Structure formats: structure tokens, C-alpha cells
Amino acid sequence: VTKNGSHLSNLQDIQAADTFGTNNQNNKIINYYNADGREQTYDSSKADRLFNSKNIEVGTVGVYAPTPGSSGFTGHMITVTRVTRDIHGDVMSIQYIEGHMSGEDQQIHVFTTSGGAYGVGSLYNRYSDTYFVGWGEYEP
Image 1 (cartoon, rainbow, N blue to C red):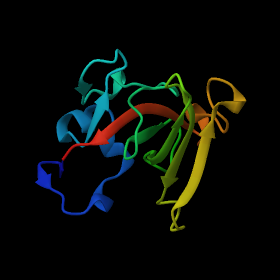
Image 2 (cartoon, rainbow, N blue to C red; image 1 turned 180 degrees about the vertical axis):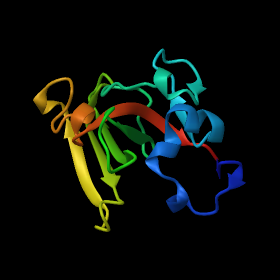
Image 3 (cartoon, helix red, strand yellow; image 1 turned 60 degrees about the vertical axis):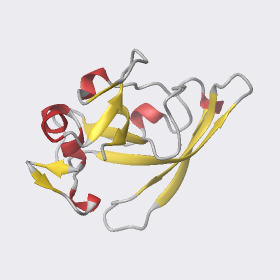
Image 4 (tube, rainbow, N blue to C red; image 1 turned 90 degrees about the horizontal axis):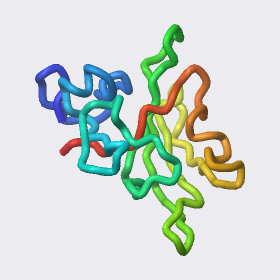
């Protein structure tokens, strides 16, 4: 993984802002799943944002960007640790971990379908002043 042309030996050196937009296209940190279901892309504007994505698996990351006009942070990331699907393969719940919460330890949370298609705690507005960019994988 690189950032600004330099090899990174520690993923903690990555900020959420490095993983979307032009920064990600230049540094190629997150390889996003395409929303059209084909291949992957470094262009976060084309990323898969679905709750019921076939691309979600253990290790998949979800990236959040600050809402335009917000200040004080560069975004947020979550990592999927478990996905529960029904017999048709539809996502019922997504368990994930998050860290870097102002020095707090990692936290485990779950999105479910019980709140409707967007999931409880809504995948799309889980964090105030952010929007969900999409699902991807760290580029090795």
C-alpha cells in the first residue's frame, strides 16, 4: 500500500481521506467494488453502496466521507467481520468493527434489515456529517 508515492508499512498511517476521491485514484489504497457488479475500481464515485451487496464478505471495508461543508475530521472506515445471509443469499446483517474513535478501543456493531432496506442505524448515515462512499478492499 502506498500513500503519496511512498510505501506504507503501517495501515495506521492511512487516513480515511486517503481512500476516496482523487487521493484514492492516485494512491490506489482501496479497490472499490463497482456498483454495476463488474470488476473493481479506484474511482470511489462508481463504488457499490448497497446494503444487500453480493460483494460484502469478511475483510471488506466500508468508507465514509465527510458531508461537504463539515469540518474537523477526514472521514471514517469500518471493517466487516461477519455477514449473515438468508437462503436466497440476501444480506440479513453485517457485523463490523471500527476503531480510531478518539483513542477509544475498537467497537463492534451490527447493521440489520429489521429497520428496512437501509439497515438499523442506517449504513448510509451511521455517522453524523458523513455519507457512505462504498464497499471495497485494501489493495495489497
